[in-house]
Image (cartoon, rainbow, N blue to C red; front, top):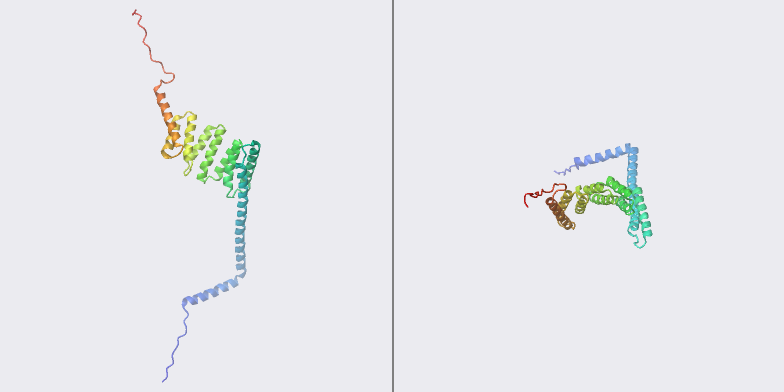
Length: 260
């Protein structure tokens, strides 16, 4: 009696069957919605092209702004000391280029520092109000840059001093002292002490000098602050020992007329 070997039919796993049927359904769906698929693909291509174009345009704008900034900075720094007329002309050209960069390329990476340099150049050219305006514009536009903001407020304070507005200068210096993360706080505390001395407020001056020495003991301004503190304390001590202005003089005993 002969026996035949029985071979089982190949099995199709459930996952493979599901995959095949899924691919078939996808192809059928694509075929049925051919127009929509083509439109979607076209929109995607156009979106990618738009993003690429925007990036290309932004890169070109940044490059143009960087070139303009280099030109302006070169003019600003390269002012011959032996030729005042030429130095003034360079400064005027630098101002125009800094202003052009700020106006034409406000979104470029160079715009922020260009606006700061514009304020510096205007103050250097004795256009104090315009320089202060440029600094205020920087604060309004780039106020999130705390480290740079401290330097801007310091330059603004010096501009106010040149403009004979000491109280405005003190306010600008105080803004630096209250900002977190600024790198020039030690110098600003020293300047605040000096300005308080200038308006005859020794207590305020002492407070600023004490903060400077306590917070920044290794600052190059700490030594001078210590000297000024001692001078102010000496004045305070000598002032308290002297009779107050307008006080009555001590009575002198009258001579006794009965004595001969």
